[in-house]
Image (cartoon, rainbow, N blue to C red; front, side):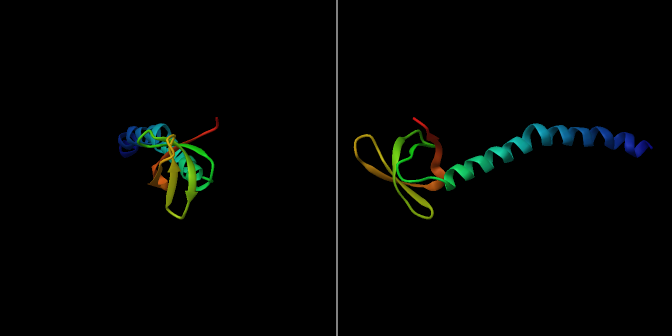
Length: 86
């Protein structure tokens, strides 16, 4: 019984840590991966660095983004942070 009493707070702390930190992070990561895999030409996107642009073309691991001035820049697919719905 003494062993259970000493392990109980540790188990409780792990459960709280899991439900408040680990699980929400896994959900966010799945959502980001889904968003990045569903990118298509014409999507308005924001990169991790803050660049706003429109997807010009996509291949397996890279995305070419057209900036506001017409320039085309190549980014890794993982560098896309958000897809705008404007």
